[in-house]
Amino acid sequence: MSDNIIKEGSMYGGWRAPRNLWQGMTTSIHADSVAKKVGMRGGTIPGTIHLSMFAPIALEIFGDKWFEKGCLSLYYTFATTDREEVRAIVKIPPEGADDVQVEAHAEMKNGQVIAKGTMSIGEPKESSYLQSLELKSSDPKELRILEGLKVGDDLKSCEILITQENAEKGLKPITDHLDYYKGKSPWGNSILSPTAIYSTMALGSERLDAEKSKAVPFYGATEIRNINGPVLVGIPYVATGKIACAGVSRKTEFYWTDCELREKKSGKLIASIRHMNRFMKAGSPLYEDD
Image 1 (cartoon, rainbow, N blue to C red):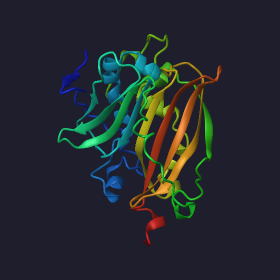
Image 2 (cartoon, rainbow, N blue to C red):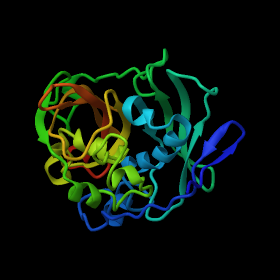
Image 3 (cartoon, rainbow, N blue to C red):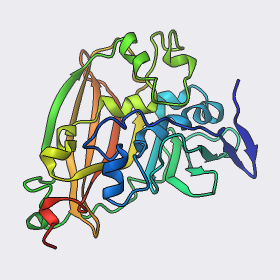
Image 4 (tube, rainbow, N blue to C red):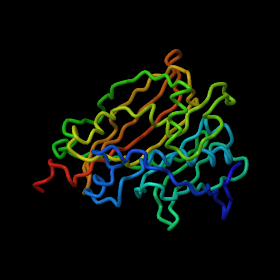
């Protein structure tokens, strides 16, 4: 039974308290000791965990079609820690509207916005929140942590086959478990959650090793787009991608990736993501003399 409520033209999901299951990763921003060294309040919850809070709302507003041709596009604005309560909020579109985009965000109990962006169905006229951002790359000579990374670089492709067993293991970190993830669905096989869809296309993640990169990485933004979805358990896929942007901000270096997921057998495009990874300058030996 859904605990979504409608208020003032928006649908509010119930309060969720995701666990930080990555605290034991002693070189990552999910560990309290590392996070506090770079100015965070404590070990952080990956932003991609919050994506799955939006799925029950998408299902209630748009129905099954959202998993076929729906998009969620979020910029992470504030990092949460272990068991802090959060909820998803989505504007309700006009009844019967197709090809429509609405505002979406997530917040804490004190009103702090932790992610902001858009949710859509079909092919709306407007660009999604992340697609509407102007991606500004820096002079490659300014990159230290990401030295050598170039816009247009291909990411190493990956063949993917998610088993039901692996899919169910992947449900542990997320807070919202739809029945569609656990067995039969209207499409036959189980489908993947928004968080798991991101994971299938998380190409280039070898750069997210804090020891190798000499900096603490964290997620900055994620868009998942179902194009001919849903992404199904038990179907062989191929993920490909490119570097879309690489730059430097006051506190971080960052890069954006654009990745696609295709059926291995037919080549049909199933889904895509746009994602930003950030790397903290604070604590990096590459910036210790600044």
